[in-house]
Length: 140
Image (cartoon, rainbow, N blue to C red; front, side, top):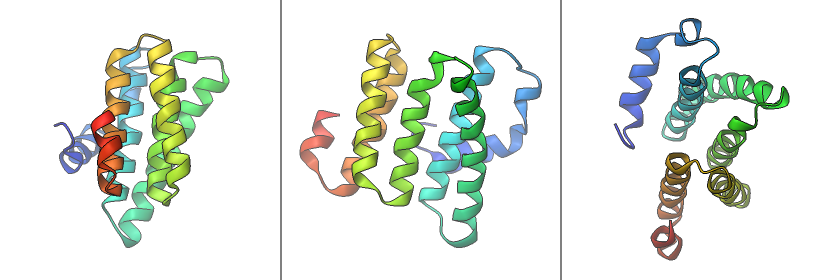
C-alpha cells in the first residue's frame, strides 16, 4: 500500500483501536505512528470538514506519541519529527517541513533505523516533488 493513503485510511478505520490488543509492544507504537501518518496524509488530500476531522484525529494520535517521548521513550523521537514534517506540510509551512524532514532523517540515521530513514526520505521526496523542486527530489 505504498503511498496509497486512501486505502491505508480504510484499513485504519476498519482496524479500530488495536492498541487495546497490542499494549506495551513495538507493534502498538508502530501502529500508532502509522495511524497518525495516515490521518495526516488523508488530511492533506481532503478539504473542508473532512480535512479538519482527519487533522483532529492525527493530532489526538500524535499526542499519545508525544506523551511517550516525554516519559523517556527515545525510540519515538524520529516518529515525531516525521509527523511534525507532515503536519507542517498540511499547514503550508515549507521551512518547518524541511527542518523536520531533515531532523527525522538525521535521527533515524543516528539510531540505525534504516526503514524509518528510508520512509523519511520518501516522504521528503514526495514533498519536494509537490513543490516542483526536482533537485531535492533526486537527492531524497
